[in-house]
Length: 240
Image 1 (cartoon, rainbow, N blue to C red):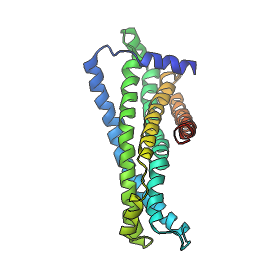
Image 2 (cartoon, rainbow, N blue to C red; image 1 turned 45 degrees about the horizontal axis):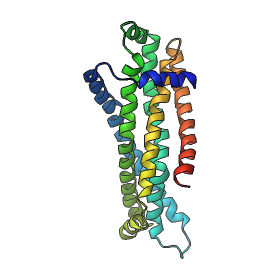
Image 3 (cartoon, helix red, strand yellow; image 1 turned 90 degrees about the vertical axis):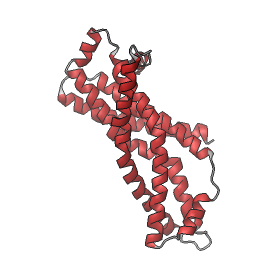
Image 4 (cartoon, rainbow, N blue to C red; image 1 turned 135 degrees about the horizontal axis):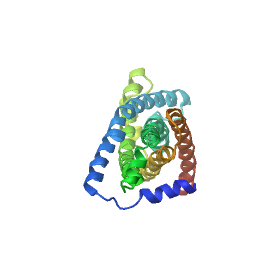
């Protein structure tokens, strides 16, 4: 914990060269954020379709209106899947990438070279990654909700468990705008964890390529545990 916050202290300092920092920031947004759009869309479409079918087969009571299927899919996507579950998935993709990149620079002494040249290596390497991931996560959340609902809209009527009209009516029924705010806040927190925790493991790795691989695994596991912990905390604080 001490080393983690000491690293964050070095990270959140004023960049020495703003032009280089801004260029690096856009590179990280593309590498860590835009390159994750494809997997977010694919997973969300399938999960939206799967949840629609499961809700339809679980709501066998004729007293329940079929509009609950769309409502249940919508709220599940907004409250949990598109924020928390997607963060767990992206922790494996983005987190391992960050740990491997920084860890490889550490074991090949590139970070030491930056320090010798008088460059704050933590600020130069880690800050653009944190800002990029925190910035892009809410957009990935919104994208996931949109394509998850589209997946349910396509799969539900296709397999005959709900009509298009009933599904759309369910999506529009009893919508709570605060759920979006709640999940965007979670996305910002999760984005910070997904970027900073793997960066910590990469920045302090020692050894060679084998240790970098072990650090990547530890980073993903630790990030997932912290995401679930903060999901519990934020849900208790913001939805109480």
